[in-house]
Image (cartoon, rainbow, N blue to C red; front, side):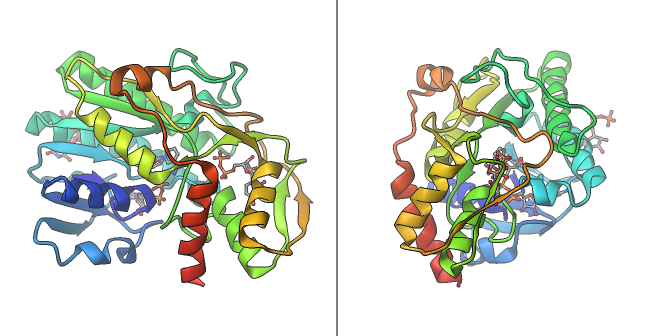
Length: 306
Ligand code: NAD
Ligand code: UDP
Ligand code: UDP
C-alpha cells in the first residue's frame, strides 16, 4: 500500500513496486495528487486505486505500507494548515493502527524539515533540529516530527516494524506545476519567459535529489533487516544556492527570463544538505543523477505539459 500514491513521489513509487512484481494499492484523497499521475497504471491488474483520506480509519489487507500522504510544498501545506497536521498526526495513527493489526512493515516519508533552520551543517540523523513550533511552517514540520514520535512509540510499545526516511528536496517529472516549489516554479517561469522569482537574495542553499535516486533508496530502506528503523537521511549532498539553481535552469532552457528578487518567506531555512553517511553504510546507496541531467528530464516533462 502506498498512501499519497497518486502524488509526485508516490506515483513513481507505485510504478517501481509494480515493476518489482508487487500488487499495489494506491490510497489518495487527490488533494495535491491526481488520477492523471497514475492513469497509465490503471490497466495493470496488479494496481488498485482507492480514494480515501488517511485522517479517517481504513480497513484493507496489505503487508507493507509506505506512508507518503501529506501535501509537501509550502504553498499547499499552508493552504489548510490544520488539515496538514491532521494528515501527519491522525494519518500516522491510522496507518500505524493498520500496520499493527496486520503485523505489516511500515515506512514513513519524513522530511529534512524536521531539522528546521539548522545550525549544524550538513545535517546528520543525530542532529535534533531547530524548528519553530508556532510559525507558518510548523503545521508541516511539527506534524512530521510528531509522526516520527508516533512511529518510534509504536515500535517501542507494540514492536512494530518501522522505517523512517528523512527525505531532502527531491524533484522530477510529475511535480505539480503550481505547487510553488523552487524547481517547478523556476522551470515553468523560464519556459514561459516570465520573471524567475528568487525569494531573498538567493544565497540560501538546498541540495536537490532526482526522483529515481530517491525511489531506489526508499525501496532499499523497506528491504533492510527488521532491526533497522532509521531515521535515515535520503537526498543528494550536492549543494547549490537558489541563485545558482536559477542560472542553471536559465541555461538549460535557453530562456531570456530575468531574475526578480522577492521577500524571503518566514522561517525559510538558510542552508540544507544531507549527511548521507548512514545511507551509504546501510544501503550501499548514493545518488547517481547529476543536477544537470535531472533538470533536463524535468524540463522535458514540463515542456510537454505546456
Ligand atoms: P505530493 O503533494 O505530490 O504528494 C502527496 C500526496 O498525498 C498527494 O497525492 C495528495 O493528494 C496526498 N494526500 C494529501 N493529504 C492526504 C490525505 N489526508 N489522505 C490521503 N492522501 C493525501 O508531494 P510529494 O513531493 O510526492 O511528497 C510525498 C511525501 O514525501 C510527503 O509525505 C512529503 O512530506 C514527503 N517529502 C517530499 C519531499 C520532496 O522534496 N518531494 C521532501 C521531503 C518529504
Ligand atoms: N485503524 C485503522 N485500520 C486498522 C486498524 C486500526 O484505520 O486496520 C485505526 C483505528 O481507527 C485506530 C488507529 O488506527 O484509531 C490506531 O489503532 P490502534 O490499534 O493503535 O489503537 P486503538 O484502536 O486502540 O485506538
Ligand atoms: N524559492 C524561491 N523562489 C520560488 C520558490 C522557492 O526562491 O519561486 C526558494 C525558497 O524560499 C527556499 C528554496 O527556494 O529557500 C526552496 O523552496 P521550496 O519551497 O522548493 O522547498 P523548501 O523550502 O521546503 O526546501
